[in-house]
Image 1 (cartoon, rainbow, N blue to C red):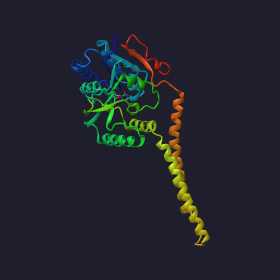
Image 2: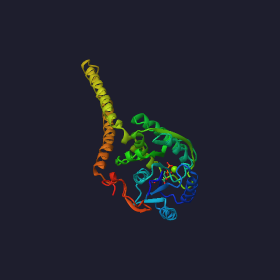
Image 3: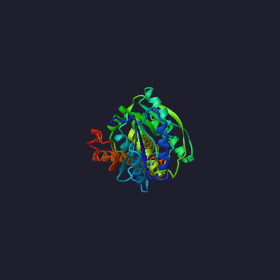
Image 4: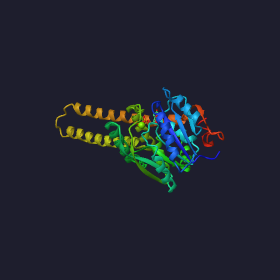
Length: 328
Ligand code: UDP
Ligand code: MG
């Protein structure tokens, strides 16, 4: 079987209300996508949903052999679902897209045009974000600017995981097996020729966001700590600052004593110094713990995800050989 020209990778978590419409829109997309003809596949990665998503996807795969299904044994999270899809996609180009139709399938055609014009990565940049709360928009906007400023990796502003990648980028990405995954940062990091297409982000078709604040926060911490050790360096600067203060306070205490200006028991100063010192230490122990914890998780070398079931897997192959050691 020839390699498909296009693989769409779609992570799915509790999207039963969206899947029928997604199916319709995909069929619509492929009937109009002249660039690839019939030569495409869709890799749905079902991320341990608790609703009917898996059954619906299995039905869809039964009626369309180019729909593939990879089902996880539990919920591993959006970034891992994307990873599994990208690991197993066969296409010359791979496009990652959300299931909730916030990323309009019609943009895919524009992405393919850019790729044919010589780009390896084409990412979707959101011009407008419909149906999202001001809180989500504000935190997203701060987050992208912050992460760009402190990580030094040119992660594009206001781009999600909706993007096209050429085969060389996909193969490079497969070699990055870190546990804390911030896929959009990793794609920016690999380099190659990258460009953007602009689109209006639609409102979610149905259901609620699968990214509550707790998941968003974890995502943000992963994004920053996997690309920067700056938080760790803050410890050094704070230490230097505390040392300078200590020298100053010490000199002042001696001067007061020597000049006989009255040695009132300086408990205010002491309290202040103790409070400052201990809070700085606690904070920095926490930061250290973040990184030490990460080292621990990396050395366990666990597989990144566990596949329970696979439907319509291409029959000519095992997963890419470079994965054999890490993802059975
Ligand atoms: N998703 C997933 N696993 C999760 C959470 C989300 O596979 O643990 C999928 C979800 O089904 C959707 C995509 O990731 O296709 C993006 O999630 P969502 O739309 O909830 O995020 P938002 O657009 O609100 O940032
Ligand atoms: Mg969404």
